[in-house]
Each structure stands twice: as C-alpha cells, then as structure tokens.
Amino acid sequence: MRQLDESVELTGAVAEVNVLPEEYIRLLGYPRGWVLEGRALELADWARAWYAANGKPWFYARPAESLEIMGDSVVIDGVGFESSRLRSTLEQAQAHSVVLVAVGAGEEAEEESRRRWEQEKPDEYFFLEIYGSAVVEHLTTMAGAKLCDWAEQHNMAVLPHYSPGYPEWDIAEQPRLLELMKAGRNDRFPFQLEALDSGMLRPRKALLAVFGLTRHTERMRRLTGLVPCESCSFGPCQYRRAPYRRNPQAFGEQFQVPLATLQHNAEYSVNRKALKRWTDERLSICEGQDGALDIVFRYEGTTCTNMGWPLEFLYTLKLGPRAKGYPILEQRCAPAFGDTGHTRMCQYLENPSRLMAAIDHEKPLDGKHLEEVLAWRPETNSAGCFCTSTSRDHKWKLVFETIHYALAQREREQDMER
Image (cartoon, rainbow, N blue to C red; front, side, top):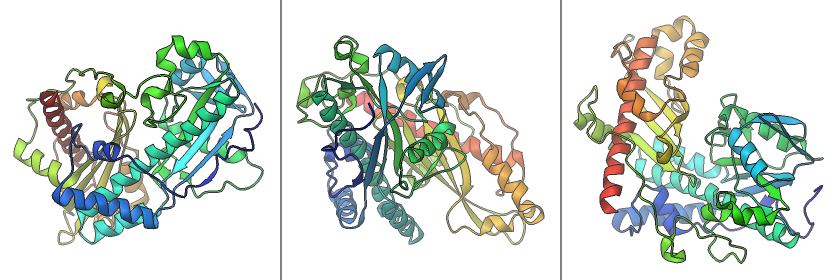
C-alpha cells in the first residue's frame, strides 16, 4: 500500500475534541461510575473549557512503504525496531503493512499547566494536565477509527496500535520512530515535536504509534487479541467487531477483577502518615488507555550549604499496567522548570555538567516491578541535596515507596467497590 485514499484526511489540525466524560474521570483517578461534583466538577469544566478555547490538537498518519519481519526485528521502511510484542502481533495477523501515526494535544495546555503550578494553583495544574492526556487518548482513538473506516472499504482490517514504552518495546527507540515518520514526507513534518535521547517527547502530551494492516480479516475474527475494538471507546462505530472492555454498561460485557499485585500492608522505611501526605500533596498519577501509568512526584528540599537554598526536582516515571505487576518502564529526575536552587549545590558549583549528567543517568530499579522496591536497601543518606549518589538513591527510595503506597491503597479501594 503506497498511499491512503485521497478522500480520507489523516493529517492536520483537529477542529474539535470531544473527550468522553467517563474517560476523563477515569484518568483523574476516580473509580468507575463516579460522578463529579463540587470543586472537582468546577475544575473539570474549567479544564475542558480552557482547552476548547486555547488547545491546538493535531494528528498525522502515513502508510509505510515497506514492512519486513527479520528475526526479532520489525523493519519499517528499512529501519529496524526491537519489539517482540509488535512482531508477534504483526505475524499472527499476517500483516502486510503498517501505518505510522503521531498525535498531540499541543503545547498550549502544557504551558498553561506550568503557569498554574508557578502560581501555586496545583488543582488547576492537575486537572488541565490530565485533560491533556485525555486529549491524546481521544486523538489516538479517532485516528484508529479513521483507519478502520478506510481499511474496511478496502477489504482490510486494522490491528491494535502499539507504541515505544509499551511492554516489550523500549522507549529508547522512540526518537528513531519519530525520525522515520519525518523522513517519509516530501515536505517538512507539519508539527513541532521532538524526541529526547531518553525517549521522552517534547511537548509531552503526544504519542507515536504503529497500526498494523492485514488483508486476512478472517484471522481478526479468530484471534480476539488482535481486535483493536476492545480498547477503542468510539461507541457508534459501524465497524465494531468486539465490545469496549472499559464500558460493560454499553456493550454488556463483564469486567474481570484483577488480583492485587501490591502488598496492601507493606512495611516501608518511612511512616504511613508521611506517605499519605506526600501522596496527597506531591504525587500525580495518570492512567493511559493501555493501563500504563504516567507519574509525577514533586520533591522539595534545600541545599546542605550556602545557607540552605530551596530546590525543587520532578521525578517522572512510566509504569506498566497493574495486570503486569507495574514494571518500571521509564524514570527520570530533573530540576523543576524555573528552579535555581540546584545551581547552589556544592557539586554543581564544582562541576555542573558532571553532576547533572549523573542525576539524569541514574535509573535505579529500571525494568523491575514496583513490588521489588520493598526489598531495595540503598545506603541511607538523608541530605537534602543531590550531590552524592547515596543521597540520590535515598530520594528515589522515598519516591518509589510513595508510589507503592498510593497504588496499593487505590487497589484496595477499587477491589472493595467491585
């Protein structure tokens, strides 16, 4: 397949985004069936209205020129990617091609969220930040629906999308995927999007995805795991082959209750009162459509010298879904936007590049499951600065334990409601 039908527009700005209320509420972390009211409803309505007036969502898609499976690699237009999950999905469906898709909520919401944070308005920051994530999910769903529409007319079927950072696809391959998308156009890539060496996208509220295409539609019916409809919230789609798993009320499907994956009464290195306070005041958790979690923890401390200058760092993590035991897929620590306190640390004054490189490079427990944090015993150094590896490990331990505590409590509450 060299090109999509010209009558199907799959690249451009999006005039209107209609995020389903139940999807937004889910991403905010409320239990299924929750109805917002009071302050929460006011903030949700404000975030939706602000984005409608100021957001600039976009999406881009192009078919690949070639697709090959070579050993453990998926080779798209001559560029190899190592993802056993993507490879097995394409092989099972006998896919003959793929479509490369990028979507983004635009940088406007991120900038406004940052301003709200700097104005010490964490509620507005959180609700707008989560709405941006909801927009990305919505755009991915809409791109998939457009592809399904086009594919059905050509006697083909679309496979579930897959992205770097999902289980069994290293996030480090994201820059290569973005370059491949950009290289496929005769003109300039139409949107501002950058992939850092770590794999993180800038602006952050964006997603790169690969949708497989197959002419063997009968295999889609036999292999239910290949049906994208189960993760697609576009209810009125005329091409739906299976019910949406998150909406049993609409399609009559029963949820399966997952088993607890975290110890609900775990022993932590700090008391639960502190963990609860940090959960409430410093932690934000956003659940994606695939069950993966985007997490931000805000650390506030002071330098150990120079009269104790205040400093603020952000820990950003991506965990896999609960059903897989919350594997740690990504983790990063960096100074918060506008922070100057880190420049007063003694090791920064001595060699700034070496210190900041060490902070960025260290990824303790990378690839491990969250439960394993309980057995991790780094050397204790409670200094407020980031000058030594022991003080940095100590802070990572506190971050991991706060996340563990928050998710264990959420599991307990969700399972009780079921």
